[in-house]
Length: 424
Image (tube, rainbow, N blue to C red; front, side):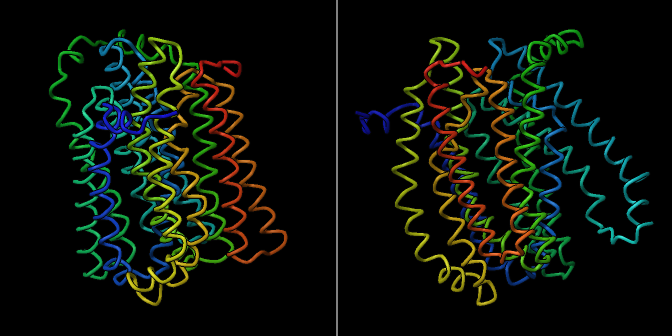
């Protein structure tokens, strides 16, 4: 039996609360701004933002070569600092390269083909750069157990991005306001993380090119696996955005993306906060004892007791709540959200414990598992295209696919928490 009182009193939960407090506040700011944003921007403009974010997140996987995932692993802080420096270099090179490719090749080709090239395509390299730097710094601060700074960065970023989006929306610049707000979030988050790194100068002062290369070398195999698997994973998550935009247009995509944004926020923020602490604690337990099943069960206990009542209640009131908060125009988003909440509950419970494969070095599992995820999404989208399914049926199929993925993955992660490396 799990003693809930011990779980509540544990350092794990205090660390999670440190991240979760900032996460909850940022969530309130983001959700609180939606009644204003939904009245300043049209569903079509939200659809354009969804396409921009989808492209940015799919390609950003390659900006760091996934080295941020390794920062927790070295015993030495100097080696971890070497990984962070390598991330800075990779992000700069990737952003510069993509900017040149877009300017010299992509944009001219699309223009020649008479494809409407939106202004936002020129902003993508900026997102790539700050996304890469931020993720590296975020993992570094978590390694140092500086969870409070991570929370401060998150709240500051959400606040700055939201205020700017509202201001630009009032001036009537269309989707540009939403996109520039998204970019500013990354810039502010990066600035806060950089401010916190001043306390760790001693580790970086010991670095040179040779030490940086030596810090990266032990992780080449895992790095390759993660680039492939996260590229596949990111693609599988964003394919529905491209498919819905292509099948039903930007307006329907706008309704869907706003519903998905509201529904997935607790999974991405609160459960990610628990997952960040889980990754740090499980990594330490793995290095010392060779297993981490105790923290696995503690984490599942917390996410289950918190998630079930909240998400079940939300499922019943979603359509009415969307109308009240966002306006009658967004009723359709509420109906989409009602369906998406089913998968969100499964994700909220299981997502924090999905880090075990990385911790134990289960390279083959990571690749094959993400291929299975991609295959499921591609199959659903293909079926929708062949049979010309309506949007509600497509969303239900995507949700069922997600629930199966979450549950099966949780079973595998339990095996890894026991120290089972059969699939490494």
